[in-house]
Image (tube, rainbow, N blue to C red; front, side, top):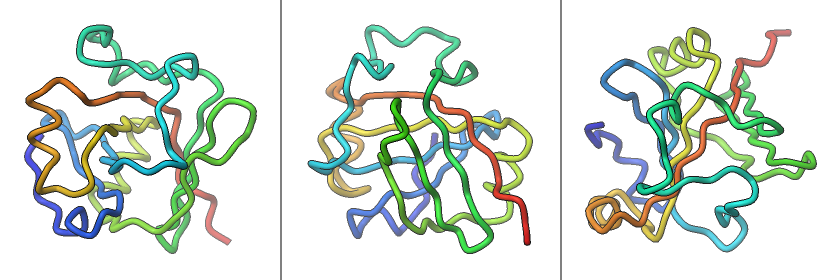
Amino acid sequence: MQLISRTGAESRPWPELMPDRRPVLVVPAAPTRLPVVDDGWADRDSAGPELATRPVPAWSAVLDDDDRLVIHRPGGVIWFDGRIAAGREWRRAIRTHRSLLLITGPFTSVLDFQHAAAAGRLSLLTTAARLAAST
């Protein structure tokens, strides 16, 4: 994954695409968005090759026409609710793959993401994802 977004410099989540065009949301650390292992989060050592293609049950993500993304964790609790810089290609990837890889860890911007990744300190989770029906 090549980090191309400028929105990450503002400590806000930013969308990316994997080389195979699967959608990714890179989410800087926040006290309200902690990765809980029992909820299905994996790290570098526990993530298998199916991680990016097999959504964790009880998680869901919906992106509306105004680029508002709502992600629910098990129990229906909101894990993330906010606007992201979702372009047409990223929306198309959500529609095609119907899943979203979430990446989080101890970083606050795109500038320190690579250090967290190199240290193996990222947490990963794939959720089912869809575009909201247009009204």
